[in-house]
Amino acid sequence: MVADSLGEEMDKIPMTPHGADVLREELDRLKSAERPRIIKAIAEALEQGDLRENAEFQYAKEEQGFIEGRILEIENKLSAAQIIDVRDIVRSGKVIFGVTVTVVNLEDGKESVYKIVGDDESNLKLNKLSVYSPIARALVGKEIGDVAAVKTPNGDVELEIQSIEHL
Image (tube, rainbow, N blue to C red; front, side, top):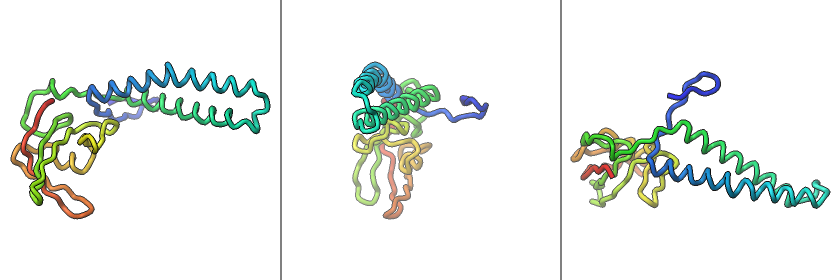
């Protein structure tokens, strides 16, 4: 647990090493490229004089606010990150954060492979599920051969765990 400025405890944010690297790269790009670019754009807009009707200035100020907000958001996430490398964790045979799990939908026989990751890394198109998603929550703690019931808008779906890999 990390304490914030009010002394309250904040939850750690689970993250894979890759997810942390992606955030660090974005932070570096924002600080080294985007921030200087927008400062230059604001300076150029200021040179044009009357700011009340200067659309470039207004846009640059809005963009600066977004960039600074995103920098703060990433810094906060990284400071609260609990980086978990599943390759360093002893295999328990259970679905845990960071594993890659192969499941079969018992209704239609369709096989799917998912990696259980943090919120910032989740991307259904890449089969990366947030550890907080309904599917991941149903799978965590289960073992090969177990069946997980996932509540969906179209009713419950049963997924049988075929394999669990620490990749």
